[in-house]
Image (cartoon, rainbow, N blue to C red; front, side):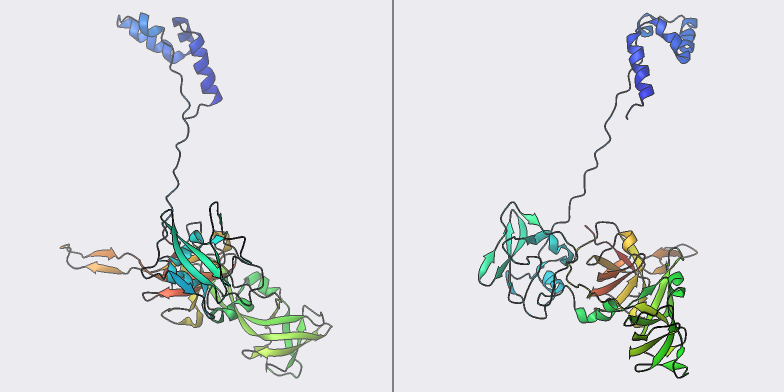
Length: 398
């Protein structure tokens, strides 16, 4: 316990006045002295004893939890040649029992050009050092093995071109979710430019049609055409997290004015009056990120499944009720759990049967590939049990 300045001052004063005269400074000590005299007890020894000083005690040191040991997969190969079509997750699963721990045994080697990337033809070898597994690359006939001291790879989204490097996950499974808007704030939606009507007065429009729009008139500006879809609700708080942005198509402004004229170049469904416009992002989304567990304790739920299927399997896309504000980043891996059911115990012997909550059981892994403030999209990379809407997701156990 750490002393306040006032407490420390009183202890020093009592040490200086080591006599009975110091009692009058403390009314409680004076009362105690009077009571003892009334009973005839001798105070010669105890009256002169000073009040013990309160010693400052350091705050208890909290020992950090031991990191989870990295274990090779039961049938991990000693050597593997990277092939076209491989993904980083495939290779991680091949070598490690817990694939998201890949960064723990993968190190930057300054001799390798683009050491953060893996290319077809690279030879990956598993070896042991100081009782821990490590990986090394053989590229173009040369072996690159890190020697101590080593610099561990810091997981982050990469920014260099990745045309030839293998991706982290199957890109085709998430491509549409990377290039198109998926989440829209309800207040922001009402402020977006909108379709006033078609040029020829039709009720619906599609690719090849021209429409009048208000709210923007920059000739050459390219836009997504979207429509507000289902509302995302946090099942825990009931808060609205946003609305699904339904992709209608894409178009370009060909004539300025109020209204301006937009030519629809591509369409996925029939457009309607009132559909909104979002600027088309020109930047290509980067898909090379290292799978890894979040540093924070993330606990959320699956709140939506692409195409509304009842059961979720491998390489299906889900939406969860946690996002960037909760610490989630692209590349984070979460465990998915099958929610335990409630059942009545007919064998308990109780007149009114007990209700028992069965425990949640781990059902697979998902990898976060796109984040918003309060919502994220993830790809199911492994499903060992049935996964359903509202099933829990958590940081992998360390």
